Image (cartoon, rainbow, N blue to C red; front, side, top):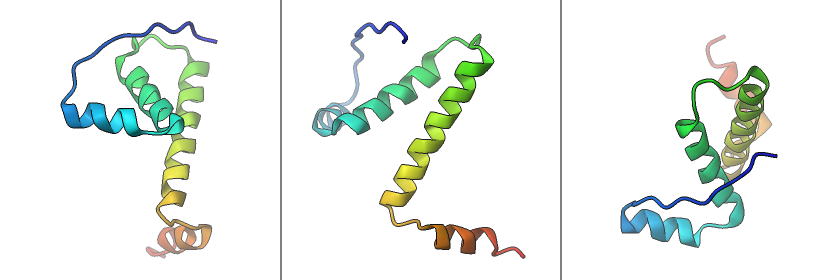
Length: 81
């Protein structure tokens, strides 16, 4: 497990309010995104793959929460055929 340290950053008030009202899953998603953008470029292959998988899981959950079903996805993927 990676050692964590709390930091403070300045953001617009609306962003701070949205973060404070978010559930723990959404807060973790935000932390993952910040970590991805600020980490050094010298990460190892396994870490990069794990982060990609985590991002893909988050995207999938978000798509499902917005109504994407396997049937709709299949239809979208077959549109060009």
